[in-house]
Length: 202
Picture (cartoon, rainbow, N blue to C red):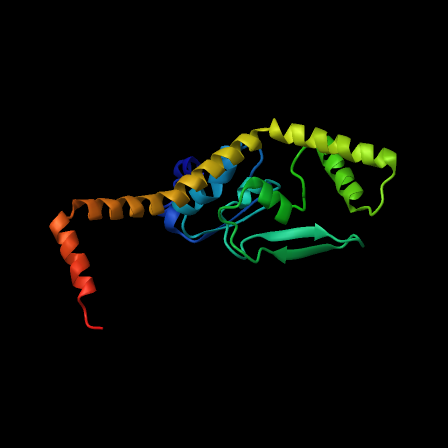
């Protein structure tokens, strides 16, 4: 865009001029890292640019604020309805965006999704036949095995360790500081402090 403007001799401060840009499928042919970066980059270099674009990428929506997303959905009667995001899409993961904005509950392969749905159906039944009970147990073992071997299992372990360190660190520092403070006081000062507390008015 900048090279195009330079070639055609646009005014020097064109990046500061009000403008409207319409792009269909802005995420097309972009690496996922750039899908997440393209909107903030355009906003940085063209602060007065009003951009209208369509996308099917959850990463394009990451970081957008309330009301910046127009969601197009087709209802049961085939009519297209429009709604908007009621909250900021900040700190959301790709799975959270897919689940809440793209209506993809399980962001995984179709086979695993079918097994999860079947497991959910069996668990909701009040009574199971012997065959259904065996199927339920088999699905539990398979899904647990697959989940434990997936990258998310390692990510969860790292997150838990990080949270433990974050939670324990302030209390550990405070406790260490208190012990250091007490240990650094002379014995006579500590005895005097105890004596003074015991000789107050009754």
